[in-house]
Structure formats: C-alpha cells, structure tokens
Amino acid sequence: MEASVPTANTPSLPESVLNHIPDTTISKTALSLAYTNLPLPIFHHSLRVFFLAKHLITVENTPTSHYLRHPDLDLLFIACIFHDMGACNLHNGPQRFEVEGADAASLHLHSHGISSEKRHQVWTAIALHTSPGIAERISPLARIVRQAVLMDFGAPLRDVFGADGYCQEIEVALPRLDVEKCLGDVVVGQAVKVPGKAPAVSWPNALLKAHLRDPEWEGVNPEFFGEEKPGRGL
Image (cartoon, rainbow, N blue to C red; front, side, top):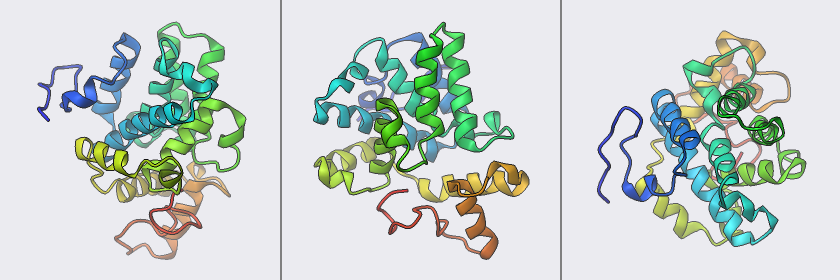
C-alpha cells in the first residue's frame, strides 16, 4: 500500500486507511489532533478501533447501522479516535484518562456545533470504555466502542464475529507497535504523578497497584488485561 504524503493536517497513513476516514472537517481535524498528540502505538490502536467498530456494526446489521452514515459516522469516528486521548500530554488533566478523553471529545464536538445530546453519546462511550458490564448496556455507541476496543486487544469477540482475518489485515496497515505496553505505561505514569487519576476499583488503579508491587517490571503491565489472560481483552 502506498503511503500518503503528509501535510499539516494529514497523517502519513496508507491511502487504504485515509479513504475510510469521514470526509468532513470535524473528523479530519480530529484525526489531525490525534496524530499530533497521541503516541503512535495509541494512535494506530484508536484507528483500528474505528475500523473494528464499523465491522461490528456491519456484521450485526442492527439499528446501530445509522453510525455508518453521515452525520452519525462522525460521532462514531470521534468516539473511537478520542477514546484514549486522555493518554496524551495535551489532555493530561486531573481526571482519570478516560474522563479527560471524553471531555476533550465533547469540546471538539461543541466547537463544531454538535448538539449536547450527541456530545453526551460520545462522552459516555469514551468515559466508560474501560468499564465492563456498564459500557455494554448504557448506550449503543458505548457498547460498540467497548467491544471494538476489546476486539483490538484479542477478545473472544474476534471469534464470535469471525474477525481474525480482518484484524490481521488492518494490523498490516496500522501496526500494533506494542500498544499494550505503551498505553499501560502512559496510564501508570500519569497516576504516579497524580494518584487521583487512578481512583479505587478503576482500570488505572489496577495498573498503578501492579506497578507499585513491582516497579522494576519492564513488560506489559500484569493488570493490563484484568482478570483475563493476555490477549483476551481488558
């Protein structure tokens, strides 16, 4: 695949990826913000989540299909591309990284005139994407984003939706680049400096506790996948 020529607003990505980004100002600027500010492994992960979210919606053939069409495709894209935006320095505020990312997405949507109801859909999907059992039930968009995140980290959903081949295909265009270690290290690094970013019984808190138990550990954080085996999802 031939890589695109980067410009001030266009990441250097294969055309096969760029051609799937919604051709709207709100999504193109979101893509640029993510590319400029996120570590590359997390940026690639966020784009893969978007591709997988679209795949899930297509396979399900449920009422969530409106997220595949304009204007709601923008909501889906921004929920995915911003879901880990709290892991970048620009949005490293006092709240846990999920909330910081949700707030950043809401501000971006607001700056483009998106209604409060639609902003709330995206905010909820991002804020709860590491909250099992809640994200899956609170809204259709939150469920799709949560499931796409799990699928990118190798959850059984790959088998359920027959997506192993598709996941391998998008990982050629958007390499993983050890995203599990990168994301875990970023979340822990934030929490070490500001413990309030890792409240009790949260995914950041589990990562922080694992780090404090063995601060010399150099691999993927042992709690990255929670109680699941590595490769089986958060």
